[in-house]
Amino acid sequence: MPDTSSLKQENMESPKEAPVPAASIFSQVVFTDPPHSYPLFAPVTCSYTAAFQPSPRDWVGMFKVGWSTIKDYHTFVWVEPCLDVLRQESATRQTVFKQYYLPKDELNFYQFCYVDGAGQVRGASTSFCFKNPEQQIPESMMGDELMVITTQEQIEGSLREKAELQTELDKIKAENETLKHDRKAEQEQDASSKEQNEQTEKVMSQLLEEMDQMKEQKETLKSVLRQTMEETEGLKVEMTKQMEKRQHDAEEEREQSSRENEARAQEKLDRAEMKINLLQEEREELRGRVHAHSAEVATLNSKFRQQERELFKMKDGVQLLQVDLQSLEREKERLQLELQRSQSLVHQNPELQRTQQNCPEDDLRAECQTLTHQLQDAQRKLADEREEARNGKRRVEYLENELQHLGEQLEKVSMTCEHAERMSSKQEASQLNAPEDTWTSV
Image (cartoon, rainbow, N blue to C red):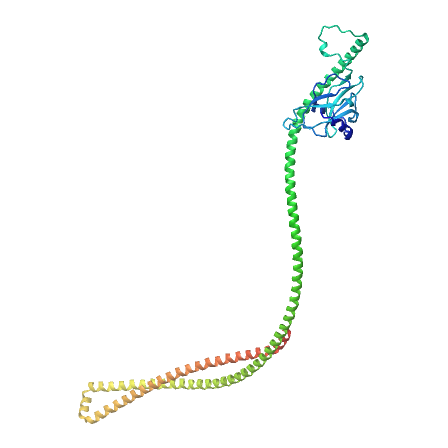
C-alpha cells in the first residue's frame, strides 16, 4: 500500500457513524487467519475476501475488542479498488496499516472490521494483540528439543497469557463458527435477495420504461394540448370575427329584406288595385253577359213554349190525319168489297149478266170507270194522307229534337248564368277582402 494512506487518514474526514449491525452481516467479508499477535513498532498487513464489489468509500478499521460504534476505531485505511474487474469479488485483498498509527500497548486485544461507505460493518476478524518481538516465542522453536532458560515469572505470565489466549481462542472459534453459519445463511439470503433484486430490477426496468413512455406520452399530450389550445384560441378569434361578420351581414340582410318587403308590399298593393279594377271590369262584363243570357233565356223560353204549342198542334193534326187515314182505309176497303160483291153478283146472276149484256157497253164502261176513278181517288187520298202522316211524324220528330236541343241550350244557359252569378259573388267578396289582405301582408 502506498505511503499516501497515512496522509489520507489525516486529511480525509472520518467515516460516518452507523448502528452496529447484526452478526449475520459480518460474514460478507472474511479476514484470512490473522495471527494471535503482531510485533510492536512494525507495519501490520491483513488479508480478506469480500462477497461483493468494494466501493472506494469502504474502509478497514482496527478496533479494540469491546467497541460499540464505528467511531471507536483506533485507526483505519481506505480500501483501494481492484484493477482486475473479472475477479473483483473472489480475489483476496490486503490492507497495510502503518506502524506510526498502530497501538503501543501489549495489554489490549484488537480486531479488524470492514465498514462500507454507508457505515455498515460487513465483516470482522478474530482478536489479536501486539507483543514485543523479544517476548515472542517463535513457533518454530516449539518443536525443538533445545533447552530454553526462562524465569519463573515469565513462565507464569506465559501460562496465564496462554490460558487467556486459549479462552479467547475458543471464544473466537465459537464466534467464527457462528459467523460462518451466519455467513452461509446470509449467502443464501443474498442469493434469494439477489434473485428478488433481479426480479425487482426487471420490474423497475419495465416500470422505468413505462414511466419513460408515459413521460413521452405526457410530453406528446402536452404538445397536443398546447397546439389544441392555440388552435382553440385561433378558432375563438376566427369565430368572433365570423360572428361579427354574421351580425353585420344579418343587419344588412334585415335592412335589405325590409326594403324588399316594402317593395313587395307596394307591388302587391299595386297588383291588388289592378286586380280590383280588373275584377270590377269583369264583374260589369259578367253582369252584361248575365243580362244577355237572361234575355236569351227569356227568348228561348218563349221560343220553347211556341215550339211546344206547335208540337201539340202537330200532334193533334197527326192524330186527325191518322183518323182520316183510318176512315179512308175503311172507305177503300168498303169500295173494294162493293166492287168484289158486284163482280161476284154479276157472275152469279145470269139475268144480271144478260142485263149487262143488254145494257150498252158504254154505260158499263162508264160505271166501271167511275168506280175505278173513285177507287183511284180513294187510293190517292190514302197515299196523300199517308205521306202527310209521314211528314207529320217527321215534323213531330224534328220538333221533338228541336225541343230537346232548346231544352239543352236552356239548361246550359241556366248553368252559365248560375256560374256567372257565383263568379260575380266571389269577385265581389274578393274585392271586399283584397284590400284587407293586402294591408295585412304589408
